[in-house]
Length: 448
Image (cartoon, rainbow, N blue to C red; front, side, top):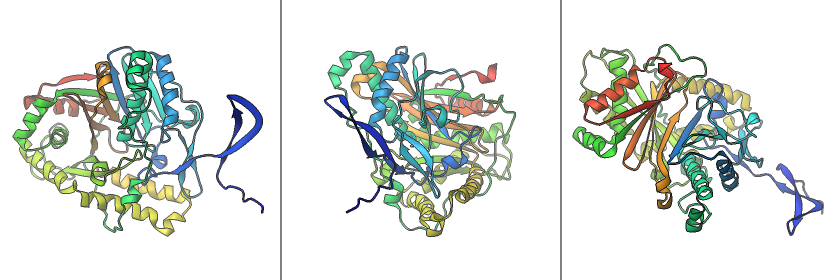
């Protein structure tokens, strides 16, 4: 019987025996994978002006050795199928294909963060690793994974680096991945999808922050460090969570610094990504999140902070529950599963997705994401000082917020491309007025 040829891509690999090459070449299938429901959007809208790249970084207690960091990346990357990928374009959809090239080069950071990742200049990979003094930076094109997947990869890269820098650690903990590191690549959107016809996302335009922009290519970063016990005490006094409080302070700052405490035709609306894994018992390293919105619409001239915070609290609590979150992503998945949509060529899908994205993007003033408390294995804690994370700009959103914490310290990070830092100042001024000590640092783009 004549064998049917495989329709999957193949790679030619020299057959080996006892570590020596033989003359025969063995062909094997190249691994490929579908994009998750959220990831379909990112290749369509990404570009130089809107990179869809986020950064997670770890600050160590010692200077980074470039050679050891490169060696660590070379060791860790082959263990993560979800990062060892390149993006390919098919007739109907984008898809992932196993990369297999040497790991991208680790470089010293010399330019502003969150730049667009050109795959053809990055060995076809969709992430980059840089370093600066004590800090290791991981920047990820969102098509690969969300913040949870990025944290997992960065932690393992850091562990491997520290084992190389301190051989006694390797003898103490071994050289394998941590037991709590997931390599799961299921599409949890599809697994948990239920037929839905309800559209949950806002499309009405929100108030947008405008102003003079930084010079082309510049990217502002400002961190505010707070002690969690102080923060919790203030949040208890307002009867809100830390997330609700910080989102509320952001909205309050926009209301006071930009709208100047007056009525507005459009609401201040903050997109808040919600990690779906705890709600649906998932450990996937693909994207698995949805956006809810915290909204405040000033229809009169004077509001107190308590009134603003009350509206934020109610809007978030009414949306962050399993049933509503399921409705949000099921609506998106139902559109993907339509037979007519699946048969539409990719270039037509791209036109439709750009339109839908623009409509939804302008419905939010900003985005504030909370990647939560980051922990490291006990053996590595003496070498790890802090984690940071922030987002690139997107259409209509010229300032964004990111929350993460390590130990007893929480850092609220602003990323922005506007010259005027009034919103940031107003934010930290309000936090300090509530009795929380804040230490602020920035990359200095506003003071050049």
